[in-house]
Length: 198
Image (cartoon, rainbow, N blue to C red; front, side):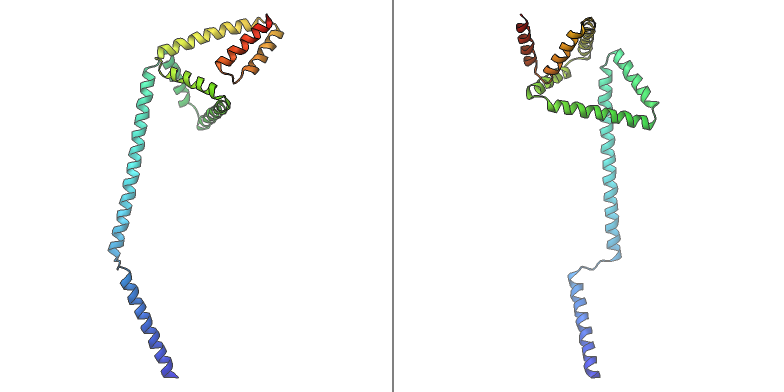
């Protein structure tokens, strides 16, 4: 019995030794130096990657600043004064006030986008054409257009304030009806309304 146990032990040891040799042949030997070299190379790659990302971010920031400066230089003196005033106001704001202002701006943009998405394709095209026209205007032309629009709105407001309550209600009803209409649709609506009065 002892011989059988001893023979089994020797056979098991031999089998384990053969398995270990087979594993050693399949896997290339890794020395501590090779592992540390790989780790160093990986560390270097990570450093280089982080450095490249940082450089790209700095380059992007410089490009944005350059574009902002170009736009600022094209502004009229009044517009520059407004921008400077806003910048000064921003410098004196607390982080909470800045965050609140950012949230308000994002909310306004979200609402404007929702409204825009609900418009008819014709109305969207009309707005896009107006935006494109504005892009190609000089700062002086834009300022003149805003001034003209402001004067027209002032006159319209003065005229509106002198109207009777019934007429104001009629105008409000018309405003509700023409929401989302294209320029041509609005024109046709008011022409038909005018003809119906006559």
